[in-house]
Length: 138
Image (tube, rainbow, N blue to C red; front, side, top):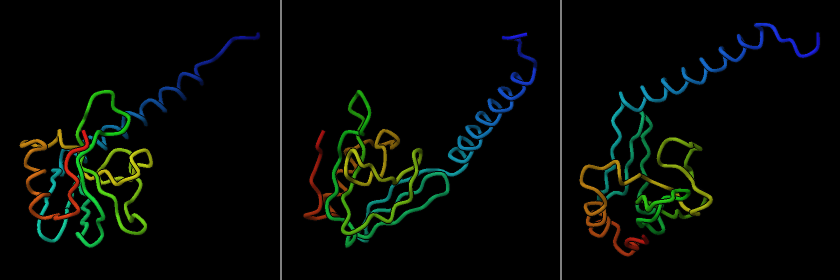
């Protein structure tokens, strides 16, 4: 009988759906349990998200600015930096910091996640980044 399907196809689909939801729940729990934060200081920029911590010294950073997050219809502010040499940032599509070929920079942090918003970030960058700070490109 052509066109007749058994329950095997449903089971495979159900298993794949459960795996996708399980992975999403795991990622959500990872982010919820480990707080994310951004620290801008005299040594450089430190970012933590979902247990992943990254520190970039000012010597490694060529420029830093606030720009529009690539791929967003509305202007979502993101702190971005261009680095000297090869970026040593791991590939991640969900976590920060991450390399963006579209922005040709390392996206350090989504500023909508901060309680103070972009204004405090601008003041901290202006105080610590010196000539590297390019301001807001929004």
